[in-house]
Length: 212
Image 1 (tube, rainbow, N blue to C red):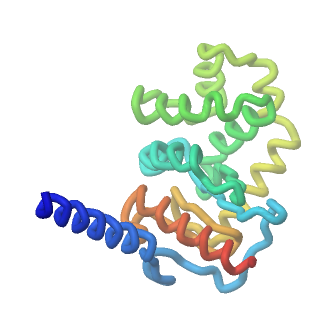
Image 2 (cartoon, one colour):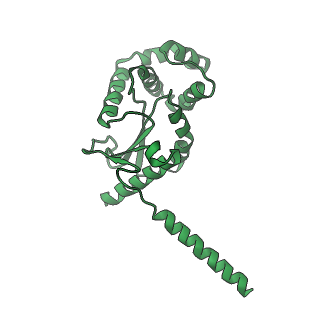
Image 3 (cartoon, one colour):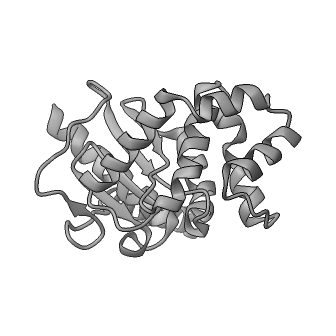
């Protein structure tokens, strides 16, 4: 009995050390994340802003989605998350306008994963307005409303803003996560997709402490 009790205490002690180690995990600027030389303005007031820069045609963005969706269910209340379908390449603008058109229609999140899956799982070639419209029509999207939103001035302005944001953050690829207009986190430096989430959480906590 005494031996079992000692083993139990030892196990508790080991678990407490493991927990302390996990809490003490930190990351290094210039290694797991990059700090911008000049902070950019945010659009989320008192909340910590996290942006996700993505492109529907990017397989890495598709593979980040499961980790990102899991994080979104448990993200801190002091964080405001915004997707940015950044057209870092002119050919990406079709998907940028598609995202903003669907968002304007109030169905952006509903079809977000579908568009990723269509390209990377079903191998559909939906890289122009006509093919995307045909795909969305099969999903039950109102084509008149979609095409009107897609070609609207509001979507054009948001597309330009997304392009400018990508340039301001000096991005050369996606997916990228940014924190509070100051930090950029990529999969390669963060150690994968889960690593991106872990580093982002670390930066969120750092920003929260700095604001106190």
